[in-house]
Length: 149
Ligand SMILES: Nc1ncnc2c1ncn2[C@@H]1O[C@H](COP(=O)(O)OP(=O)(O)OP(=O)(O)O)[C@@H](O)[C@H]1O
Ligand SMILES: [Mg+2]
Image 1: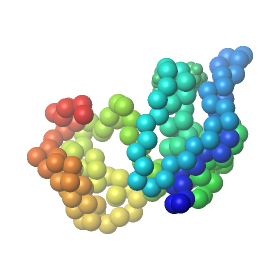
Image 2: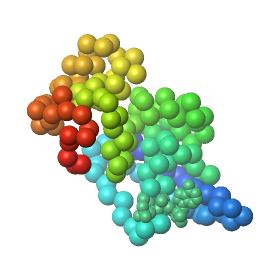
Image 3: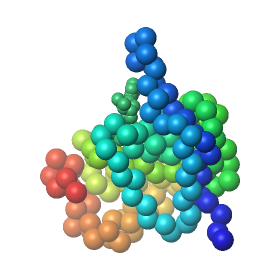
């Protein structure tokens, strides 16, 4: 069996809320393998966003371990988490969080340039990706001129 690219082992996440502690996740085990498409379903407040934020290296667990491609990412510093998000794991929010003054092609190539890829290659990769997504007619649009989806 193929090994997990993302693995949670007994992960808990607690939030401080004034004098009380909210146990958003407890003893959560999870495994995702390459190519799997997984939906996380549950009532409001059940911890879906907390789970995704942990998986996407936006939060660190209160206890337990999270492995990404075999590497334990549970104890990373903020700086190391930022590096990981730049190079290894992507995260798409419900809200777009696009940069209002960058054209579509520049939103996409920005990440490549930030991660040290050569400018021309980043521009080409951006156009290739937008073509694959059928967005070639939108490369010069600003976010305000796009549909939500
Ligand atoms: N930053 C925070 N500080 C304190 N409590 C939080 C924080 N974020 C989430 N919580 C609490 O943790 C629990 C899980 O919240 P979470 O946002 O993960 O749920 P959710 O499943 O994504 O909900 P929804 O379906 O409404 O998006 C809730 O009780 C919520 O109030
Ligand atoms: Mg949520």
